Length: 436
Image (cartoon, rainbow, N blue to C red):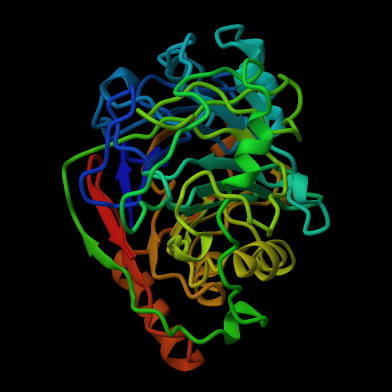
């Protein structure tokens, strides 16, 4: 399986594409390989970004984006908006999305979701406020069911979690956790009759039961201990650059104001199976039912899970990310972390202007070390053209790529944190493919 990360602008807009990398994948009705799952993060392509009033803050890109319109990329499964600030939640760019799309769902922090609904551009049922993650609440994880690649294979799952800092005056500091467990194909041909090639959430007699019966067994847990002491026994992922792009197909139904706690299957996007569904339901761990002549003991075991932490402004590892890591990531066998997307530069305002803006290298290296990140990609470090009273007192400490790599090397060699961490700063338009 693989994760392709493409940097679309010079700042913090990324396209993440997860793929099972199975040979001869069939195409769904959107022309995308089955089993892939894509996330467009904080889209801002062109034009100024102004907060409250241009005299308070006006920002402009100094590096042209690699695309001029979102129509130039395949429709993503998810548009993820991590802040309500206009350099993350940029209305002119968001309006480039097809408001009638049956594929794309918008997941945003609550303040951003309210702002996006207020645009009255999208179907409200496709705009969802992310619940804050809690280890005591299974419904605080947004889950996407991904159908098997072939009859007799195992289904996959993608999850998204929002981890905000508490009592954060600036409202900037959070992290978004993403995991992807790929679906698989059957090891040998089977006889199978799916319930329907296409049906809506209400036309199927019991789509929820069909979905639960076809969920894969939960992968083996990671060792039950803190991430910093886990042994990095898995081989480091392979890094390579490519120029191709792909995108998956998913659908959802859910109310506009809250994330639904009941899963519903929607339209089929592959020749034989219904589409992934969007839900926060905790799936069962018993899977005795089988819809094929293949014995369940012969079904392929799920692959290891890919994991991403996206935190452009940073958030403290403890107590926020540590809770997510030692519960969700460990239980999903998603450690070591596949990729950390986090800024390098540290930015400070006076306390009366909100204090820390970007945690930068000091915060990022703590996260990378504790989660044994295989790769750290810089984000939100563009030298933008900024003006307004809000930037008059800004203090910035810029870190070069060499400095970041050296500090990471020292931390790893001194702390026994596994096989090290690849540090990258992607140019605008550059892609990185991580294979596992």
